[in-house]
Length: 87
Image 1 (spheres, rainbow, N blue to C red):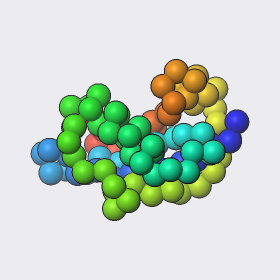
Image 2 (spheres, rainbow, N blue to C red):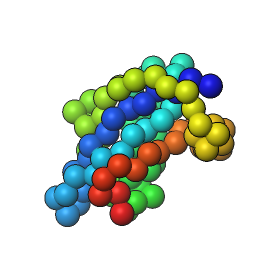
Image 3 (cartoon, rainbow, N blue to C red):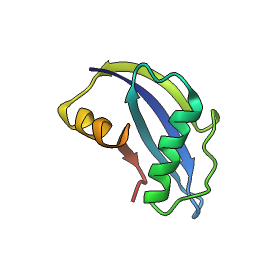
């Protein structure tokens, strides 16, 4: 399975910046769907209502999905790679 990687930087409520990648099936091209995935993740991190637009999130590249990514995509439609300040 090929997936699209969306590079995302969101300012947290405390002012620090969290960096994460949103991984979605490559056929999903609509940015609003990708933002919905990101907002769902932000809510799980108690960072709901933080801005998530093209300013914070942009398409990066296509890659082959790992088994872990595929399972998450089958369950919720997306996978998140936490990079920095995601705690």
